[in-house]
Image (cartoon, rainbow, N blue to C red; front, side, top):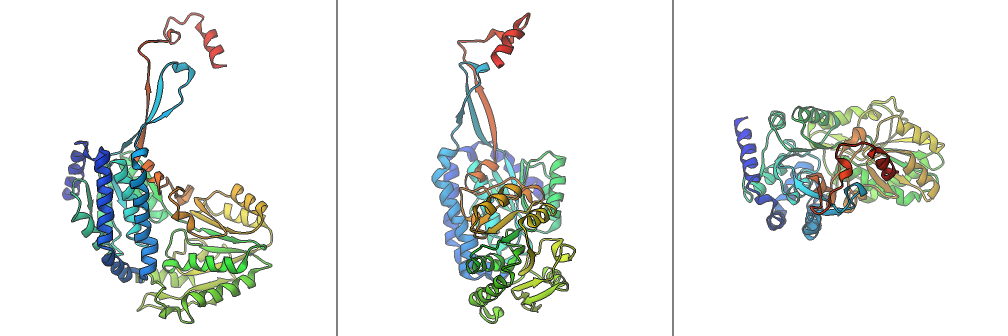
Length: 456
């Protein structure tokens, strides 16, 4: 605890030197981060392979490349983001000027998960640096190889009083959360997110919670079935289903259900071969505990394809299930693995009612050619974000803030949203020294009549 206390205090002292607020410093540190990521690319690819069996392409696509794009986007635009924004001034402040200043919070904590152990540690860090903060990163203890490399490349290249990585398990998380921090950014499960928020509340520390939930994928009767199958299989089985925005279950119109299932089976074979265990492009489950949990979910309903488990390899084959209801255990929690249950529907109202009754998901995906169906789903359902006729790809745009709503999280990041998340927006009114409205001062007398006329 003393060690963590010392780090927090050192970072706070450094923050008060004002160096992290300097725009040239911020940009130089972002460029340094980019340089060391590129330099250590091979180490990261090996670590991600060892932790999750990610192929080099998938690891670069979803982790390293994503972070580099975010860095490029931020470096190019940061000078414009930090400028005070002039806004309109009300008539009650005649001849005054109004501005919004973006200022850093101070010392921020980033708690990262294991499923994308590099991207989800470094992407928030980009926003923290851009906004002018000091940062402590706590990577997941489950992705041990990637955690080690993240610690190495950060702690060997940045001053501890500016950015540092602290490894450890649950006890370390607790000690970090007990500090008087200025901001907490957490990515993980709903249950741990609640605990993070509870600790943060003790010091009234603001938080961003990137959680999860059961993200539905709706395939309407008029959808392009082959295209839908391809995009669903890619989005669901990426990282062996261990993606917070993966399609968690399918809601398929009854008229196309079995045609879609046939296309999904064909696509699984196209992507991963007859034996996905032998595919160089198919991942593995993070550990035995999660493998066991996923195995239990296969005991209800009917397996259409897949269901193979190899505990030694931490492998579960791409699995499709039917004869599932909301009463089954698999529909009561986020699956977070390569198992895709299918529900069927007759009318869109059934879908909307069911989703409304089970919390606000982090993502939602809709496959349809009908603008009216699209309008109805997007207007009537609340969710973090999503795609029409695609899966997951909304995360790749720096122009789209990413985050949850309700039980799927609060706050957002990516692109400028990351800068805004780690910045306090300070409102400033600059009044004129040459003109003063006397109406606001006592004695008030009959001034209320004039005030009413002004407000009307």
